Image (cartoon, rainbow, N blue to C red):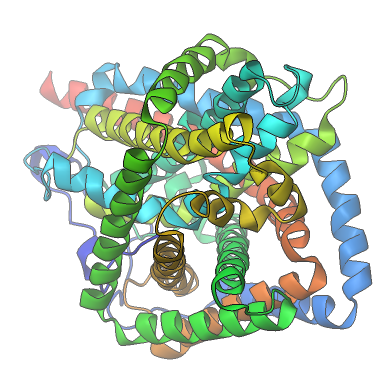
Length: 534
């Protein structure tokens, strides 16, 4: 993920006036530019994070045992909730977009968007494309080709190819963006229209009133911190695995824990320094550069790859995805398949949940002045189409290589999931050059995304201050890197996935409550505006 957050000053909520909404004192921040007050949310989050790191270092086997047991219990007992809640949020957003509330602006009624629609789309995509596209752009479709989801097709058949992309679309499509959209909508409305602090707890003022400033609100903020922290560490871990694998293929760098720890340490130093220095120009360069590199790599693969096959596969897979959408959205594990869901759908949804707070802050930052309808449709539709296209071009190319050219990409992926992208590039011209570009792309996503998350973690633990103190930024930057390292050493990708699923479940409940809170506030404001008009 990339960072357009700048110094944070751009998110300062207005004092609502006129027809744009009423002034409110609910949670209004004092000392917003002084670095924020380090209260119970900071100390509680720091204390628990420190205990977790110590647990991972000194009692690694116990940590793995507990997380594995917790994972199995959480997914077997509550796995269905990821499916139901995300689908419900998606339906709610679509309903909201086409309701009268869709005309309300995220800000005063006189506000207009700061960015053009095209620039806005580009910023959204550069923010959330991230490491996952390289990590899973080939790995997920090719894995599903070799082992079709839920036994819906025979392995390595045309039907399996369609199912492979269909489920990749599901894992990276509308449900993921619905989570981001509901957070972004809630934060934008709360900050730009109601003038509240940029804290997750403040989004619950319509439901909880002044209690958001007490223990309940503090608990919500602590859960937001941990969801964001483990979402970030998962991305850091995936990035380290990708970079290590690419460097190993190109220059023989050992693919082991030592290399991955060194990579995480180096990148942590860079993004922490970036967050502390507030060099927004450098991060803007990374954001723009990563977008251009991703487009270049995409166009290259489209040109040298099987374009006609990809186009036909795209159409058929999208048709299958649309036909089966509600079945996929509610397909649980009553008759088995828990392990597959843990590795794919449950993990992906938990990952999106963990990124919700950060992406919500980012979307709120760039969306002031847009209507609710324009915001929802833009965030849901355009990024989903782009993700579908990326997975089809890269995943579809890998499928073509294995099915018609005697390739073994699926076999390499089964042995090491992080080899999938590079194994695909190896089958085409300029493999060395494109592999270097892919590594650079991952590093750029790595640095810019972690920089942004360091800022958001610091903000959330500084009483919503938009200019967190430098020591707080350094602390969360280092702690993020250390947490990623200890989880990598504890069990690699498996430990990262287990932890993000287990820690995201409480935050899933918060997201469900968030949707209710948004609806209640919009409904109340609409009634109040109607009463004033009359």
